[in-house]
Image 1 (spheres, rainbow, N blue to C red):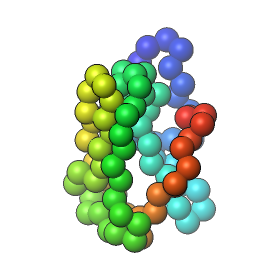
Image 2 (cartoon, one colour):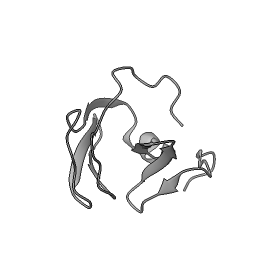
Image 3 (cartoon, rainbow, N blue to C red):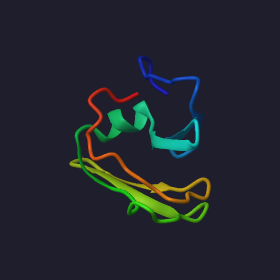
Image 4 (cartoon, one colour):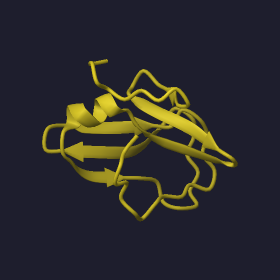
Length: 92
């Protein structure tokens, strides 16, 4: 990681710069601060459809920027996927 990178201790990290956090009955997923800085300006995000299930260790999303494209993987089975329709104004 680079100096100044935000690494919250309440998250569980994969080697692929993805993280998960359990919030009650929900599992919230995202990409690390390092990945966000590496991608620079993110231009497109593709997520599973609401209500869909994703098998463990399969591709389940896409994050694109002007610089690169990052496929995200499910590191656990997700049942009843949902996604926020609101952009995150302050990423973790």
